[in-house]
Picture 1 (tube, rainbow, N blue to C red):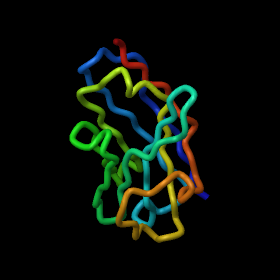
Picture 2 (cartoon, rainbow, N blue to C red; picture 1 turned 45 degrees about the vertical axis):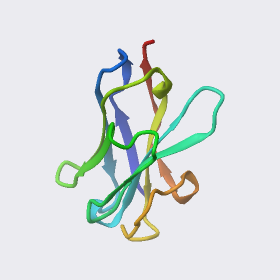
Picture 3 (tube, rainbow, N blue to C red; picture 1 turned 180 degrees about the vertical axis):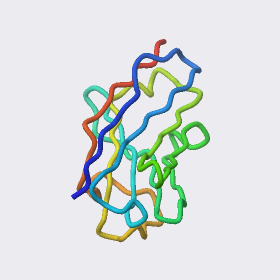
Length: 127
């Protein structure tokens, strides 16, 4: 069992930056693969980023170079730094955790690969 609680989000101007956080409890973070996802209104959930136990990272082309996934095991927190934001980034953002690989994931993972999810947080980017 992994418990995930998100914080951050809100309204951001076009071109601006913000950081989301995801507090993790119930499992050793060193044995987890984490991901960030988003769902825009009327659209499917989109995989954005994955990070494994070695802190190797993998990104969707739509966010590579703008978003950064990271984690701090001592603080038990996962982060998503979002820069150069665009109106099309407007969505509900979710953190997620998978324990089945014991942290050994080596590519961008899809939503079906994750068992545990944060509650979601709205990010709105102004036009």
